[in-house]
Image 1 (cartoon, chains in turn yellow, green):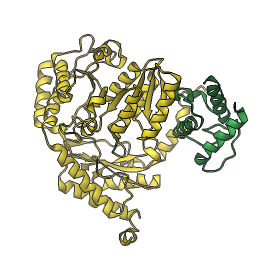
Image 2 (cartoon, helix red, strand yellow):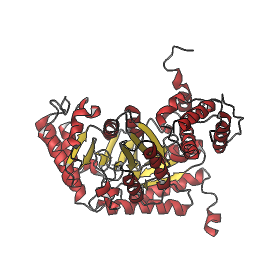
Image 3 (cartoon, rainbow over the protein chains, first blue to last red):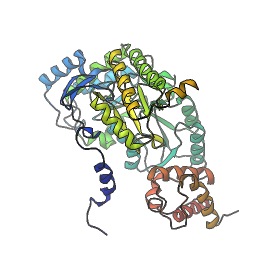
Image 4 (cartoon, rainbow over the protein chains, first blue to last red):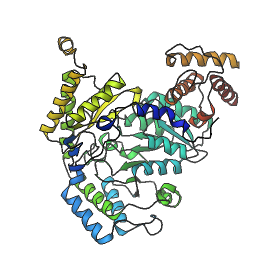
Length: 409
Length: 83
């Protein structure tokens, strides 16, 4: 027995302490200067940012910055209050109107982060007698929403329609009247794979379940007007709730949920992560509103996906073990040994490329990943620079030694 | 056809086998985390296999109270009897 509250963290602290120290530590990067959506000064060196979720390059968009600056100067630095009390400005309502227009839905609620949107919607909607059914590879915010709520939580195999069918059938057999919320993601961020929404929604609706789709990594990226995977796959009319974030394609921070459910506004009265926190600052609200307008009317999607295909194809042809296919903005190579993955990351940052080191348990199937999230703002020269450095480091660490065999095969 | 706790335990051992890479001997007192060296993701995957094998729903909410293989067998027996 121990009285030390921190003792339980010893194993993870030991793992952390075994990582390289100083600038080779992947989890202590600090940006000294940010020069553009795709470049920063890190460790005194100009570095290409290849792992930032800045899919549209919106962070330095002139119109967004102008809108944010004007809001900052006219409305101040923050709201200092809850949406329910003094924290709703006209601009918050305008942002919600912009979301309704963007998604063509009747209702929209803005949260202070995407994490809180999932936490709030899932924990509040599914009560003690209800069920939440989630994909095994769900984001932490979905798991945490389940943990915060009082519903019975059931998990199905990743993107496996038959397995979802089995789990729902069992719930319905025992509890014909229960409310069920099925939670899916448009794009699963680690490997960029899409959910087969057509099959999953057909099955969910057959059991009268509500469906929530998290489009955090797909807003702006997929669909004719950038609404995401539900739009791309033509199933928007089947989805009850779409959750998303402003912290990736939209280039700032904040979360939201849109819906056509006639009672949706009730959530403003009962959703604790919406009520018991301060609302978004006016500058953030202004840039998010502007960015949504720009995303709906842009063709940055095509440029983003062509950038991703270029890097994915290049890595694959070089002989890397690929985790991704280039159908999403993610390019990830799989590295068998964790220490090699950590060393790979250290070499890449030395060469002037920042990528994400993604390790279990944040990754599916316990994979060690060198993961890039591309941006429409990346130039072809930057993509080719990343590729050149991947090949240089891969060769140095002996990951590409069997290229000739692969080419011959 | 009610299954005994031992029969259920044996079936669960078969489901754990693919996750038990080092072939550690399993008893009813085996702790998933310490004895079988399985992390929480492995345990959730085993839980999913158990659901499909016995055709029952085992809520994830129950996991914090299920530390040993024997406790898994007991909860399965209880859930089967409730059907």
